[in-house]
Amino acid sequence: MTDVSRNGHQTNEHGNDAKATTTTGGQAGLTVVMGAGPGGLCSAYVLSQAARPALVLEKAPFVGGLARPIRRQTEYGEFKFDIGGHRWFTKNDELNALFREVIADELLWVNRVSRIYFDGKYVDYPLKISNALKAVGPVVAARAMADYGRTRVAAKARPNPVVSMEDAYIDQFGPTLYRLFFQRSSEKVWGLPCDRMSGDWVSQRSKGMSLVTAVKDAVVPTKGKVVSLIDEFMYPRGGFGRFSERMADGIRERGNEIRLGAGVEKVHREGNRVVAVTVSQDGKTERIEAENFISSIPLTLLARIMDPAPPSKVLEAAEKLTVRNIITVNLLLHKRQVTNDTWLYVHDRNILFGRFHEPKNWSPEMVPGDDYTSLVVEYFCSFGDAIWSMSDEQLVEKTIEHLIQDLGFISRDEVLDGFVIRAPRAYPAYVIGYEKPLETIKAFVDSLENLQIIGRYGTFRYNNTDHSIETGLLAAKNLLGEHHNLDQVNTDKEYHEIKRVPQPVGSGAER
Ligand SMILES: Cc1cc2nc3c(=O)[nH]c(=O)nc-3n(C[C@H](O)[C@H](O)[C@H](O)COP(=O)(O)OP(=O)(O)OC[C@H]3O[C@@H](n4cnc5c(N)ncnc54)[C@H](O)[C@@H]3O)c2cc1C
Image 1 (tube, protein in one colour):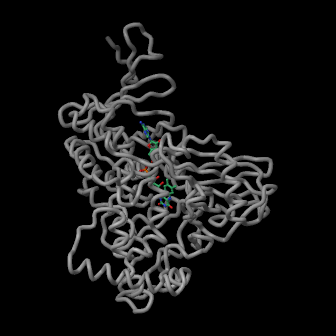
Image 2 (tube, protein in one colour):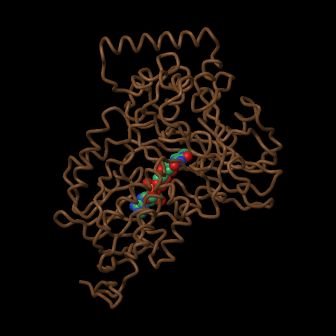
Image 3 (cartoon, helix red, strand yellow):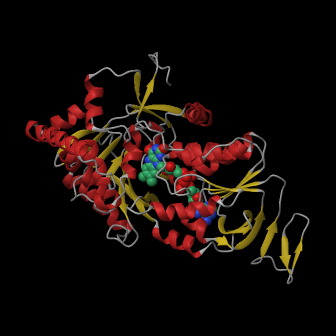
């Protein structure tokens, strides 16, 4: 038996609410947003701007999710990090305007200089075709062009559906360039051979790109100006996490609440509606009722914590979707600069990490002063595998060894400190066959009329921050009376790193 107190909280019959579930109920029009990554924060930010009540529930003690800020105070001053460098890029003007509004006076434009390191050589990334062919030498370049030609002719004569990641890369770039530039890196990221991964990831990431379009764009003037989103990007000067922190400030300033350390443990449904969530915070559980719900928490988790439980086929589907984790090793260095790259992709199999970035190259405010720099080194892994099982000390040591012995980038006496961040479930994995289970879960979620799913793992879609916040924005707009189909986000037809505009752009006009 429970009593409802004036503030809507309940105590159980023993008057003991320390461990009991209290109920906070039904503020008119309340939207509960699950997860305070960029997606969830964006929903709450837009609702707050429209003076609608919203409550954000976040399990972690900080906002930002995968795009959160990481700060290390040292005797030399403060070092700042992202979990793997996050650049802002989108072709969507509304999202750009929102990013600018939020970041305001903290906005920086950063030049992007990224390279791939493979077999002791460097080549620009994203692949610039002339540069890539030059790096491999004339013989391999000729072979790459010839076998690409053969692939195209064969595909025309006997079109085969593109199923796997391998099919998709070969279709776009031919077998030689696939083996040189895509196979090793993809297998590092996904931990599986490319013929087991779905081609969807490639088409989502590089639609409209192929050897033909790359060569064409290099030599033939295109219709409409191509604005490259490759060479420059926007970034908050204090690290990407500032985007989330500033949205959070905006939400609180408008009177809405973000509860940190508040993990959603149950999502209660009645008929075709969600009626409440149960959260756990400071050892207490609380049932919170609301009118609308937006979820950016892992889709598979959402299915598992439904009360009553969904049909067993939905729970079985949730077991079938898999993810990849990321570990970053963050090194603090007494050195002015390691490279001038924005990112360096490391394809060699004998080097365990896949990529690193140097935060100082993104913003000088990421390090305490000119004499210091830092590196964020990314390892892709799965629960229980050799990398995930390494201790933090081993990971830091391995990173230093690779950087000294294999790459010659640093010396041991330049390393001031190193620490590890583990981000589980960072990459929804499009393993062949993932579509059916995903459809099953989504069909169930769609049947709940006042629940919307948004974000990256929230929708099990490989969304960057722009698409993650776009789903958050549209979900909020739906609650404000508009009608948007969130499934349409991140499905456009043009390669996401270029934008064609009808007339010439004056200098800075796109900024
Ligand atoms: C290494 C790396 C590099 C990236 N680089 C870029 C880049 O350059 N540019 C870019 O735009 N994007 C980049 N991204 C992608 C970007 O991080 C994501 O798109 C974005 O963070 C997704 O936002 P989200 O809100 O959907 O999810 P998340 O950021 O994952 O947030 C979800 C939140 O839900 C919370 N949560 C989980 N379970 C519960 C629960 N039970 N109750 C309450 N809360 C819960 C989590 O703690 C988390 O805070 C990168 C990602 C990675 C991993």
